[in-house]
Image 1 (tube, rainbow over the protein chains, first blue to last red):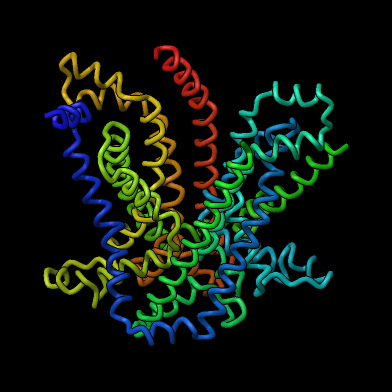
Image 2: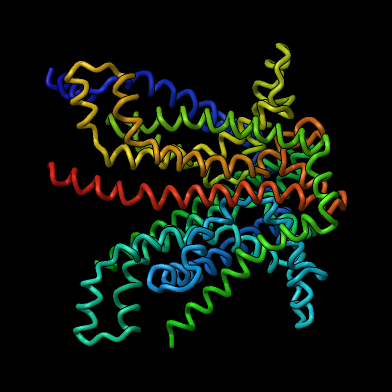
Length: 279
Length: 275
């Protein structure tokens, strides 16, 4: 009886059944069912076949390339993002508002357009590619190009995570620190950085997750040379196109998900640790 | 000293990363003159792609509004078992590669898929057709609106709704007159995010659509086809349309942030006072 009352109290407002039904339908149809199809498809593959595909040299180099590029790009974004957020929040300069609105531009621009633009800009005949070529740097068709595209696509994550935390920081804390004799550098390393680190890691993991699976912005600049600049999502696309390659596509997809999951779990642990450290 | 250096580095970085691509697209778009530009945009194939993209984006937004309102109401107004699990599922699409998304729906609706044959018997085609494009686009944009609404509804609590209920209001009228006015700006914000992503989705759509020219090529696929066919300026001309929409969404977003973010802050203060 007591439980019944408790249950009643929980659902004072109407619409529980209807909305639960709507959500179960959409989440089931759109998310659970497709994932179930992938896992069922994978369980049909024998273990030895699975290992064969996983150990294939082309698959391995594609996975290595995807994950290493995503990690490097997310690290660059971590530093660049903290810097940009800091400058946008703390300093006033001409065009600050414009830049602030444009931070989300990489999210708004279709990835294919971004990829095409970056590929053309950094091509040997492009605005920047020619310049870089004269100093002996090649971006197009190398991992550098892939990292560049991922930096572009993941750049807003860290800025947008850190910005509100920085803006919310109490001015009194800064005044207290300064009055106790802390210089600018000490203030940043001892007070600002520990405060924003959890948010920065959130942005970092979002950028990482996005970078691992990114396709549209990368394939134009990467040149897609097997074993050299072919990312894992592209290899999946190629295998799906072959039709006989569904098994291989499923294995690569599962491997990507598992590795990404482990990485994000590590990120979570790291984030908890920074929170703990903060206290 | 350090301050000027930091600002300079940041501005140069942002100029290269953000401003330069915008300028580049616009310049390349009209690279071979204004008339070719108009031709590239006005021809049959491009117009078809534009209409298809508008259709897909519009349907996606409507479905996501339904999901967003329904899901946010469910999660913010009720407590039930498995809520955390549901929230995790909602966030899941962010961490799955678009290519994998396309592949998942081929496994379901392709010729040898779970439902492909069954639906084919009834003459319904989903993979390599417009419904498939819509399904993957909804998957990819699933979290955008609902993620904006859940914190907003949670912050507002259920006091107002419960008061209305105690005064005899029905469920729908509570929703229309109390909940919706409270969240309309957040909803619009989510719609803008969803719109930008939906019109630009490429990876998932390129897999599920089969890229059938003149049939299932959305704007981004059309651009890729032009680029691959060495119609360089045409590709950028069509891209400039998407660039304009992208910049417009940023403008609306900034406007919404400036005008409604302070208000929510004010609201939290008043609710704090009440309790």
